[in-house]
Length: 338
Image (cartoon, rainbow, N blue to C red; front, side):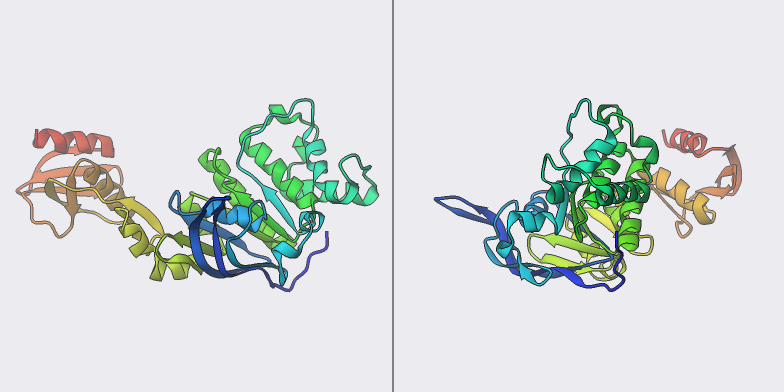
């Protein structure tokens, strides 16, 4: 696979309208979308359920027609490409689980060459070289001879990504690729996609609900909103300008200093907490879950003084009890107010 070092705009949306068209009606899901995707970058599409993420992705794949505006692929309108031409420009990895028996991982990956060989075409030396290179890039050499139905969800996703690489397209589109994975597998897959965008200079564009992972790993974020359309930028720019207000509408607090989300918990009591660093943060988090707001500034007869493995509870400066774990500390505090 030849790696091109120069980045360029591979997907350009110009006043795009997306939705569904029938003989009797037209339903517009989103309109006036104008933004671009670049090669050599991992771009993540995020947004609420029902906002049109899947519709947009299907439109970019040419699985359904646009309702207005333009989608340019390599500076050419997507509707002007023939199906076989698009198969050499865009490869797609979908979310749906699949069941295939009596097929090895390498055989599945090899099917990515069908735009060049035909469905019953024979693989030549060049095809096999591309297949081996894709397997190496995704680091699944040990899976090559395994049957597909013996693989985990994460391993199958890696095989599908290798299949997309074998298709040798400049653009790879993925619909919720981490949907069925456990958290370590989600992290591994997102890091893999980011690395591949760098090493192959391909455009990798995916939709995801894993917001915090996207904010940590993606080069660009597309934030899709019913009112504002698509807001595009680096995770850091969106954190400074857009994410806080976007999630505030949904009773979720986005902390731009940490890049993390949290749910706003109400509280019924307040307590003074003295401590520093992660210990202070973890005790404060645990207490808030029990509807107790803790801070250094709180004026309270009861005070917790926390150090590593030593949590002491005072009332009017007199030691009442101590704990070595946060679980024990919560039990002590709850008993004081029971």
